Image (tube, rainbow, N blue to C red; front, side, top):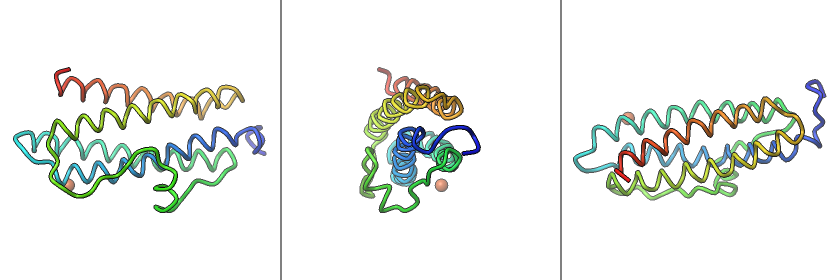
Length: 155
Ligand SMILES: [Fe+2]
C-alpha cells in the first residue's frame, strides 16, 4: 500500500482508532445533552464551555475517521455501530447538575485517555508515527481538560 504499511500491520491501530471514533460520537451526543440540560447557578459558564468541548469532538471525529482510511481501513459510520462499540455510555435527557456532569466528564475523558495509550503503543510498534502523533495530541488535550474539570470541582 502507498504509505508503506500493510493492511495487516495497521489492523490493530485502525481498531483502536475506530474504538476512539465510537467513543467520540457518544461523547459528542452527551456533551450536547449536558449543554442543553445543565441547570443551576453555573448554567452560563458550563453551557458555553460544553459547546467548546463538542466543537472539538466534532473536529476529532472527522480526523480520526479519515486517519483510519489513510491507513487502509474503513471507519464505522453508523450510530448503531458506534453504540455497539463504544465504551462510553450515553444518558437520558434530564436536568443535569453542574458538579455531577463535570464528574462524569472527568471519568469519560479519562476513559478516552486510557484507550488512546493502548492505541499509541500499537502504532509505535509498527512505526505508524503519524497515527501515534495524532493520538498523543488528543491525550494531551484530554489531560488538560481533566485538569481543568478537576480544578472546577476544586479537588
Ligand atoms: Fe447551543
